Every structure is written in structure tokens, then in C-alpha cells.
Length: 142
Image: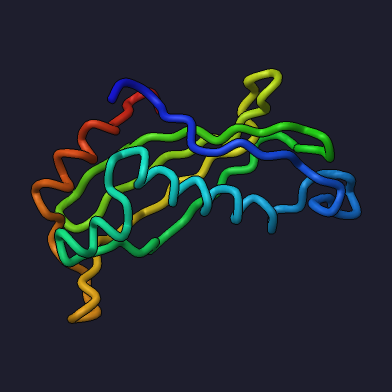
């Protein structure tokens, strides 16, 4: 898979605004979280398939948002992303929230996704078949 994948498109609505007139930080999280779900499917690793075929799923262990520019009601956003790191039991997704009209980056999000065995309730080694699919989503532009 070459380059970043488009994961989500959305609109900033008036109820996303705070008393300063821009999208409040609390509203970035749902957009980025939804985009992470789409990332797995875009990589060919849907949650149901991951668990039924490999006995694992993932949990988000850490999320870091960088707020770069304000968004206002009426702005159209697009979130793209890729895999920035692959470990033995985890991977990191790097996502960007861009203005759909201008291409300007308004925020970034790094999510540490840990492979998890629901039977033992502990982290688990990443299955080789899943690693191969994650490698196809690697990006090195940031």
C-alpha cells in the first residue's frame, strides 16, 4: 500500500465550538477514534476477522493529539493516516486531520495499538500474517 490512506471525512458543526469560537479539544478524539477503526479495515484487518482468525484484537494503549491550527464551524475535514511503527506486540498509527478544501493540517494523532488476547486479558504477540498486512501500510513521511 503506497502512502497515506484516506480514513474519514466530516464536517465541523456549531455544537463542536467552544466559547472561543473554534472546535473544542474534546471533539477531536471521536473523529480520530473513528478513523482508527477505519484504518484496520483499510489494512484488510477488520476486528471480527482479526479475532475469529487469529484469536486477538487490539486495544488503544495511548493516544497523543497535537493541535496545530483552529477549526471553525463549517470547516470540512479529512483524516488520513498510515502505520508509523511496528513492534512485537504493538503498532503505532499516525493520523492527520486536514482541511478538505485547503489541505492544511490542523491536528495530528498518534495511537499506540496493542495486540490483546481476550482469553488471558493480556497483551499478545502480533501474528505474522497481521504484521505482513501492517507493513503494507507503513509510511515514513513524518
